[in-house]
Length: 493
Ligand code: MN
Image 1 (tube, rainbow, N blue to C red):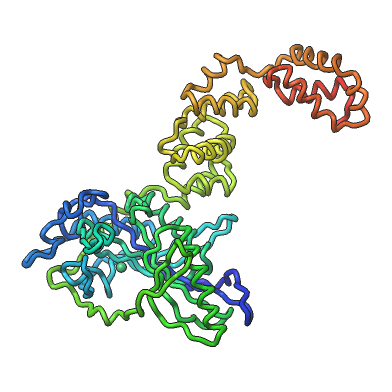
Image 2 (spheres, protein in one colour):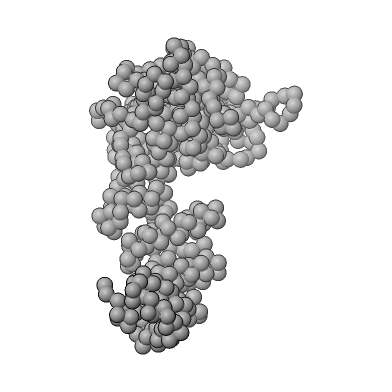
């Protein structure tokens, strides 16, 4: 794959001296979904007692030797294949030397010159339906550090090494992004791909995915400006906010005749601003060198091919299939494939039903209800089969779409099946024309003045429809009511 830099211009920001363009790229650290760490057998379970998941290797005891976790390597390869990237059959682990209180070895084992995964791509989908491609520069495997705890004691800080040595995939994008909104959409798509692949749980609140955001600004068409890196931003909303704040900060400095210094900054979500942490180190400051405890990592082509053959269907392919096989709109298909669970839910519900109607119900009523309850689709109180059954009742005209909403509300509350609800509560649609005609005659007899009025003002039809629906407790077939009323009142069209 040969990557080309994105040339399309992004949204421009109006400054005091003219328009500016944001150019940014991201380094995403994604925790590998694996039961044990990258070079030790210690557990990776989140939320355990501090320092209860630390092997001698993680604690950097003298003489301990790292042993690579084969499953973590497999996960990195799987991720690379999911990003349509080059898999490097030989890669090398290096020591990245720096001091940090929660890094007992004094270096992080990472990959520098020879990462396990090379160039790939991610197709980013914007809310309006537009898509664009972001180049992936590389993906490398490395260890996470431990965690310093400063809020447990007024005088002392503590160190929890449970996270030390956990496998991370650092996924580096090209500077192909042009706004905070695009950056957030990129992370959203990347997260979806990793979750489909089962290589990272994507849980940003628990720190399973965090982004370092490299932001620069330039006048349209000018060469790249100096960038600042905002470290460890842990939500999509914060990423978008941090980018927009940082771009405005840089524009302000440049327009005042200042220069941007390359540095590392942090995003303070409460204050809504970025702040300087330290001047940016260069790669040579880390004194990278190949880790003498680890041999170069050699992958067998057949092993990689086996992983490739076992990849699941990914969001882009699934979206294309939902559009062609089910006739869904681009929008509905995009919403449904955003999470693997909602795509599976939809397919289960749509089996043998009107798929477009099912898509409407899932993305509309169901998602709305889940949102209100603060639940995700995996914990939906309404199973997929029940939504399918409900849509079936609309399709065969047992109930109207309007009554279906009432049935759905009862399903949410009681967990009853839609068919049973309709029978027990007598909600079957009245399609029998003589019953509807009877209701129409009753309404006409009670409102002679309105009957005169509607002849001059056909808009009043709606009022009559409402009255007839009320007479039938909302159960009359709306189309039949409309047709019969028009004929009876002598209204055209
Ligand atoms: Mn890193």
